[in-house]
Length: 371
Image 1: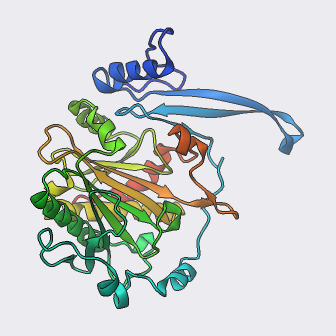
Image 2: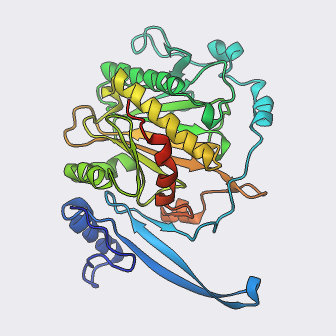
């Protein structure tokens, strides 16, 4: 059974003689790794004299949560503590960036690279409108870029249809399989996305990125440290709870208890370990679920997102394929980044949109979504 203590409860403590990092490691071992699955949170209160109200005394809550799988913490701020997402003029940005775009129809065949024929005989991979080719920037031993379509330079979130998403995911799966057939050592595979400038994308034209490495990334390594049964326990505990969005058939979608970014959503493929093991039925279901999730982000006022689908080497028993999705945005008229010292140097998100609120809004979209 998963334990979710009240807001003012504290987790079992390690002895005070241990360092802070040793205490955290001990707590993870006791609760998140081998003991009771715990949805741990603590609430604190800050106090100040508010100049907006004649310097009257003001008390505000700050809630800290710990991820039940990895122990990574986040901070939930009171609602509307942060500025609302700034709305970019996407039509204007599209027009400015279309000229010279290497992913558009008139240039994509001549300005994007090809794979060696021993890896991909045709040089590039195609499915429907989607097109995949090597990434000119080597983020991994094997890197790929896949565009939804050479003809779709602008794709707002609510225009990313299930079929567009599924076809783009399918070429990434084929890339993973082709790389493994050629280089079995590159078995740590992920499918990723930076959608539009707030997410870190350097090219406006919407695309996914694939990576295949001989060694895991930090996130992949942390997740492999989790006891295999924990993933299923976590999914089971959240399946019908207040953070559940719903199911698309075999994939359960939920709002992350301790989000790593704004409106983080998670999904688990409990019987698969690697993107290379995904079949066409799962690709179609995933495209459907992602379309619903991105429609929710659009409803919340977001235009941008980051995506990661990562697992372990194919055939790894007990380790499920993980999906993590976060909304991205600039904030306010100065276009402040949504990543500050807290996220970049403390590895701790500070968000003002509660997971329970995200899930409540998303459930209507996922209701009856099973394929």
